[in-house]
Image 1 (tube, rainbow, N blue to C red):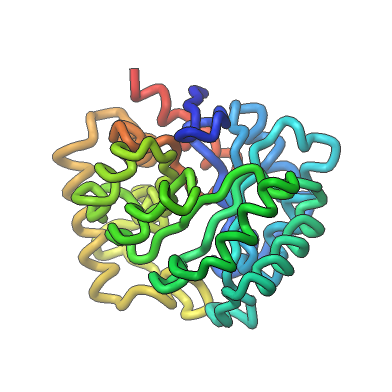
Image 2: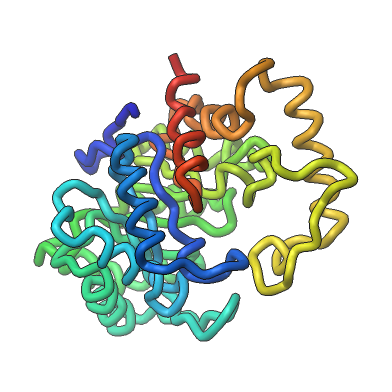
Length: 299
């Protein structure tokens, strides 16, 4: 594994982090605690030290599984979570963005994660007008002073949102999380250059394009995705067919022979000089190994 300092935070994070949306139950299956503990232990053995979770990956479920799995290991991990939504059910959230609501969410996340501090606390897909809420930002920085939060970040939506990116330094946010992968390179146009100019740490989310860049899906052999999981809920069948066809072309024309497309796709993101780390979700030791090997392609 290789490591890089996350912007100006001083946090040295593994270039391949561990995304945990899947633990919240919206990817077609549930995870038992013992399975989560094994996965995180294996990731640690591969040198991964950074975890990204969120308040609404399940009703605190992902955070709680992570917190329990990391008992006695808090100093070995850098933990990022998010704020801004109340989970009501699968793909159903209520925005909760007042300073009071976010402060309450922070306390809940601390309890779920079984920790007294969060390394990186990120606004989760906020609307632009929240950037004018002085009370919200003042509360966040008070929490930094108290030690409950070490650093504040922004998880962008949409992924070309230059307004939010350019506001980061002025508001004291030190990182940007943005959707970025070989199939969706919109962030390259404005967001990533602005991050580089400001010295912001960058976390590339969905770096495997919801698993389509794993090479598991072939043209003419595409499974039917349930509406109860992210891919079936997000994409229409014709969109999935186009993505699978594009990945097949990429594998044929861009991925060197003998190179795993998963490792290649993550390395593609990491080669951008503005990107600090990628945060793919992982559900097996095999996936962890494949993802961790991405750093070997950067030499």
